[in-house]
Amino acid sequence: MMSETIAIVQCSNYDQQAVDNAINELLDYLGGISQYVKPRDLVLIKPNLLKATCVGDIPSTHFTVIKSIVDQVLSAGGKPIIGDSPASGNVLTVASPSLQSTGSCRSNGKSPKRSLTQMW
Image (cartoon, rainbow, N blue to C red; front, side, top):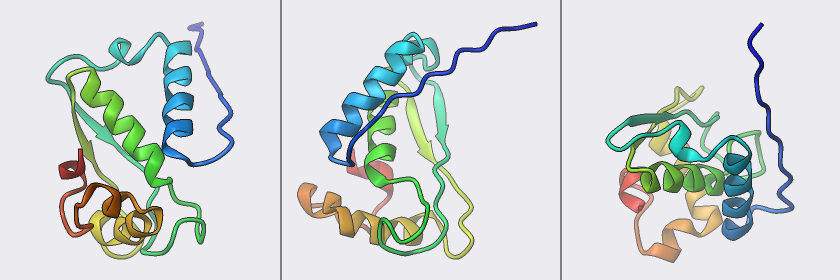
C-alpha cells in the first residue's frame, strides 16, 4: 500500500501576506514546490469559481489563494494556467467581482478585464 502525505495549515485571514505564508508552510511540509513543478512545466490551477459575485457570497476559491499558488508556480519556473468551468459565465467574468472586491486589480493598476495571468 502506498503511503500518502497530507498537510493542513491554518490561515487566520485572507491578507495576501498571511496566505503566502500559509501556502509556503504547506508546500514546505510537502517537500517544496520544486517537488512538483519543474522549469517550463505547464501547470493547470483549477480554482473553484461558481459565478460572478463578491468574495464571501458563495464558496469560491479566494483570489489571494489563487495568486499565491500562481506565484509559487512562477518561482519554480513553471507556467501557470488558470482554468475552471463556472456554472455561469467564464473564468474572467466570474473572477472579476472577486478581483475588484479584494482590491487586487486596483493595487497593481491592472484592469479585471485582462487575462488573470497578466497580473503577475
